[in-house]
Amino acid sequence: MTRRLAWTIGGGVAALVIAVAAVWLWQSSSVRPSPQASPTATVAPTADAQSLAQQELDEHLESCTAKEVTGGAVPERCGIRIPWGTEFAAVDSVRFRIDRMPVLELTDDGFIADGGVLVATVSGTGQNGAARTETYRTESWSVRGDVAVDGDRVDLDVW
Image 1 (spheres, one colour):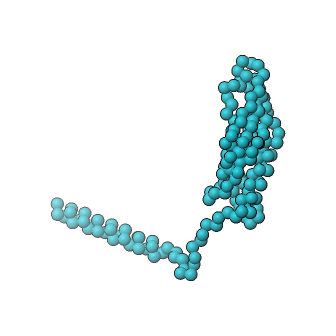
Image 2 (tube, helix red, strand yellow):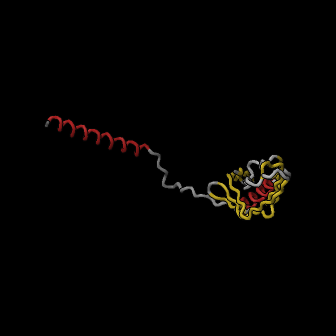
Image 3 (cartoon, rainbow, N blue to C red):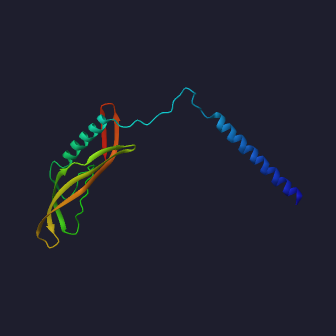
């Protein structure tokens, strides 16, 4: 029994020595910044980048709503979701109108644009088989996505 205890203690000490050596080697091999190096600061978006991004978003959303879509499909990558469903047996067309553009704000990981007003007029066949047209108004339309700013160029990717 004492022999087994001695081996167990010896194995534990050996494992501890190996762990300490591994940590020491790992820390000593890490690249450390020189004393003169300054930390990289996160650059806040400039007013120009904000303005350019808003302009690009406005143009993108206007192109999303420029023409009537058929079959009830909504334009992809435009941040448009329409809550129709139970009123229609089939949707023939949807016409979108923007009453107020959402206001864009750049964030650390993309952008969010809030406060928009979107109107969708849906035409099709109602549940009773008769022609039906309904207008849906979203008072709190928001759009999100990714953004890349490079000098005077802004690229948006709307989700």
